[in-house]
Amino acid sequence: MKTKTQLVCEQCNKKFYPISGSLKQRFCSKKCGYAGRETGGKKGKHYPHLQRAEVRKCLVCGKEFRAVKDFGKRKQKYCSHKCYEVIWKQRIEPNMVRTGATNEKNHSWKGDKVGYHGLHHWIYRNLGAPQKCEICGATKKQKYEWANKDHKYKRNLKDWLRLCTTCHRNYDYKHNLKRNY
Image: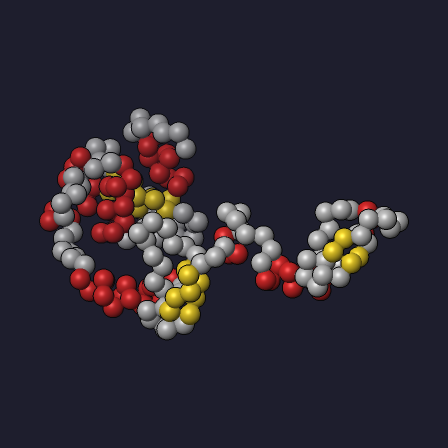
């Protein structure tokens, strides 16, 4: 039902009756609505892609882009993350100091005071992933684990066994090391 109130389209200035009596309608048709949103429409914090932004040239590819992500002293210099990575690999990465210090030479080395997961990670790096159980000899099980023989968890590579999950639980149970699995 058409209302008696006529509205003026914000895009083409044509007079129209709003659909279903809604006085909030701003455009006479979908075509004018699309055109109106492209030229201005809503702008604000909930629509950052529509906010006014400075148009700049990318320092890498030279493409023009809208610098929407500027804030404070930080200014957007690149049109995409891909262009940023190009500069990072050329200028920043070669200047990074990599000492290559591993094991005892690393400043974070904890020796035998390492935690449970850190020690197991060290074992995996030095001995690799276990592929066979040393107790039952299985090679087709889904999961194999490293088990510590004396349960003191020291950095001794000879103090570790390759076990399947079942044999590992049984081994720990026999040696009174009950863990919640």
